[in-house]
Each structure stands twice: as C-alpha cells, then as structure tokens.
Picture 1 (cartoon, rainbow, N blue to C red):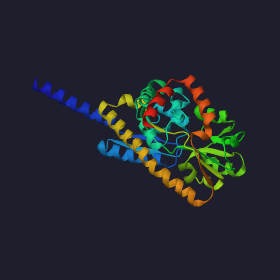
Picture 2: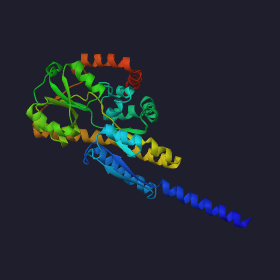
Picture 3: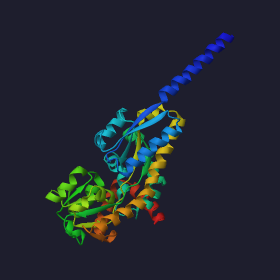
Picture 4: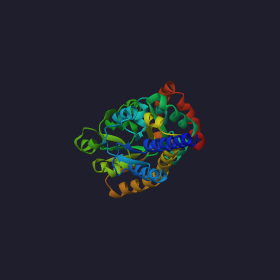
Amino acid sequence: MKLKTLFKALALTASIALSSSVAAKDMRLGLIVPASHEWSKAATAMGEELKEKSGGRHTMSIFPAGQLGNEAQMLQQLQTGALDMAFMTVAEITNRSEDFGALFAPYLVKNVHDSGILLNGPTAQKLLDSLAADIGAVGLGFGGASMRLLLTAFPIQSAEDLKGRKIRITPFPPAKDFYQIMGAASTPMPVTDVYDSLANGQVDGVDADLELVWRMKFYERGNTLLHSSHMMFPVIGLVSGRLWQQLDEADRELIRETTRKHLNGLFKTYGVVEAEMLENIRGTGKVQIIEAGPEFFSSINQQWETLWNKRTPVLQELRKEAAQIN
C-alpha cells in the first residue's frame, strides 16, 4: 500500500513538472510600428515584467516594424497559433468586426486622456469580449496613440480645400468614409512611402498623428499641419486563441493584467509626448500649424455619424459614455 502511494506521489510530481514545462514559453509578439515607437517600447517593458513575475517561465521576443508581415498577415498567424501575441491597430480589427468602427467616430473624444477613459468603459470592454468568437484571438486591452490630424503639402483654410486632393489614409472603413464624404481621394500606401510621396506629388497629404509626422519627418515635406485631433487611433493587445486555451487561469490573469497595465500606460505617455512633438514641429518653422475643432468638418462629421449609426448601435452607446466624460 505504501509503495502504491509512493508511485502515485511520484506520478503526480512528474505530471506537475511536465505541466510546468509545457506552460513555460518564449512568446513572440509582432507589431507594424518601428522599435522607436511608443507601442514597441510598451511591448518590451511588458515582456520584461512578464518574465520577472513568472519567475522566468514566460519570456517574450518582440518583432517590430512589420518583421512578421503586415497586420492582416499577423492576424492570420494569431489565428493559426504561429504567432502568440500582437499589438495591433484597432483599424485592422474594424476590417473584420464592424462594431469597432464606432471607436473612430469624428470628435468622439477630445484628447488621448479622454480616450483612455472611454476605452476602459463598459461598451469598449464589451467589444473586447467579442473578439475570441469573431476573429479567433483574445482581446486583452486597449492602449492609446496620438490623436489623428492632417499634414498637407499645400495650404488649406477650410475642408473645401481638401476636395479632390489625394490623402494617404490607413485603409479601413471609418477613415475611407470620412474622406469620401469630404470629397478627397483617399490613397492607401505603406507609411514608409509617405515621405517621398509627399515630395513627388503622389499624395497631397497624409492622415497621421504627431508621432509619425515628427519621427518620420513628414513635416519636412509639408506645408500645413491641421492640428484637428479628429479621431482617436487606439492599439489593441491580442493573444492567440490557441495559446490562450493552453494556459491555466493563473497564467491567463498574469498575461492579461501585465498587458493591460502597459497598454493603459500609453494614454499617459501620449498626453506628454503629443505636447512635446507638437512643440518640436513648431520649432522647425517648416509648416503652418492650424488648430481645428469639430466646426472645421461640421457637415462631414454629421454625414459620417448618420452613415455609421445605421451600421452599428455601438456608436450611440459610445456617444452617451463620451458625453459623461466631456
């Protein structure tokens, strides 16, 4: 009897050891932004904290700058389990789940700080919960980025000046609709091609944020910076559904909380970074900076709202929550 008990104890010990071995993992996380980008810095810090808190069982290798492909390709890799995690633009998710498009409503929030409150609110968090069934990846949390603005290679005074102009956009429905309503010719292209394209006339302007305009030196090819903050542009933390199923609850909670912490830290980071980068651009004297509020795009905003209210009830829910912030 004692021998039998000993065998059971040894079997249990071996089982626990085997489980720990299987659970230990070097996770691969992909991003399309360069290593110098705040999203990449947050991912690196997250990986370091995860390693520390897991006692070295979980480590993370970061692959920035699209090393693993574009976001559509990385999403496929998440679905198959070839990629473990990604920090991805919510724009890419909107191409597969239309409700996420409501997050890009013009002037939904005033600034990055307010976007952090809204994205941690009940409606946005409910959207996260839908991802496992919709795309085969688990949504862990949202993070921030600079608010969207326009840099043009020509002078502008009103939205009318943008009609017929070629504006580089991220190709996803909310942005396409915004510029189509405006009468501009939305022109998708890799962000790495924008600098030269502004110079040779392939595009007349770019829908971007202050981080791109400053760090990729787009301002050198610009004439007017329309500091409009017309849309937020969040990042989302995703983990492969296949990996998630293999993790126990303790590891799931560790990964979820560590990811959310560093993504949420981006809202505060960009509150500081935006102001610094705007002053950096102003200091170059290269472009005219125009402050533009909702009135600049007034009729365009209304038409966009009408269109998207028909597509998803989430927009009205978000507007109600945003009104409580503002």
